[in-house]
Length: 159
Image (cartoon, rainbow, N blue to C red; front, side):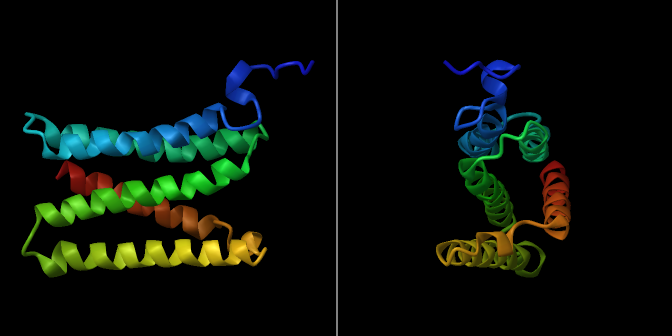
């Protein structure tokens, strides 16, 4: 018998804890975000902004809680950056599609962003396969880049 940690399932180690559920919710939000993007709603921009802002805030919150509660997991360490990249890439591609014909304004920055995200992911995967995962951990500057990137996308979605 193992006593449950205070806070129940939210703070338990393993797959089903609040930080991991927040990360999974961020991935699950992507189809809703895409549907909202193509929907003809009166306040569509505000809805897209709210969904992306919510996803961005859960990105901060899941990592903060996992570290605070000391329940970081390999699954969370893997899925968190993947969820970030998926949200950023989906929002970027949808925005680029919506602004066809503006290659220098939208499509070029989107292509550069996607190339960078894929390159960083490939580097992390390669280093992990070589047993050097810790050498490419996300640092403070990477967290700042993600925050600026998500804030910028929030602004573009609201515009």
